[in-house]
Image 1: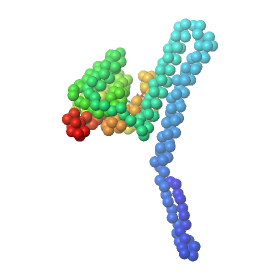
Image 2: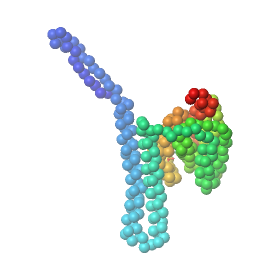
Image 3: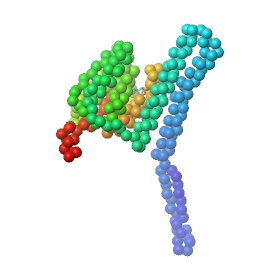
Image 4: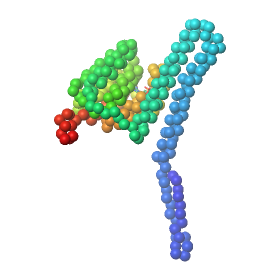
Length: 268
Ligand code: ADP
């Protein structure tokens, strides 16, 4: 609490009372903590790959470059670490862009079914490499008003996570259907799942249930924070159900596009 006090004086300047104003700063403090944590996390996440690239460069310059096999091994690690740095920077930029007050979506009316199909096509080979069954049940004719590139990014992030956090031989299913005037997207996996204690935290920036697994698979820890922000920006809702060692389902609901006749009617 911040406390402000002032005396209340009577006609003859005698003390008649004291006014105390108590200002609850819990929320402010919390925000400040979150900001500090975020800066500390960003610094740490950026430092790790840079330190590694620097270390290997130094070792190469110190003589390791004369050993071709070793050089190749080091360069491959450096390549991977620079990749991670690039992903991290682009996720950070995207997050800061969408957190701005004046952030605007590039809105158009688009066909959700084809956006999902494109996202699935992009991730098909990753699923095959991991011997996962990637299936879909996509209803057609579901349109939405929104930023198509961003919606595609949401879908890619969710399917990509489902692939990463599901063991070989598992299954990922993507569904799109209409319910109560809303477009509903579901991404379900039968992977490692998330425990009830950790579930409420997964949308926080840099929160990971298993740091090593996330890093090892190229995760930045920002994917779901971006998904949550973009879903909110589209007036959508996100829900997640998960059971440890059984699987996870993300359900997203977006307002459907009004149909053409309605648009013409309201414009005239
Ligand atoms: P990351 O880059 O680490 O995947 P995200 O923000 O996308 O970051 O996800 C945050 C954390 O939530 C992940 O590190 C992982 O622990 C958990 N998670 C996300 N999706 C799933 C899923 N489908 N199954 C199990 N855990 C998941």
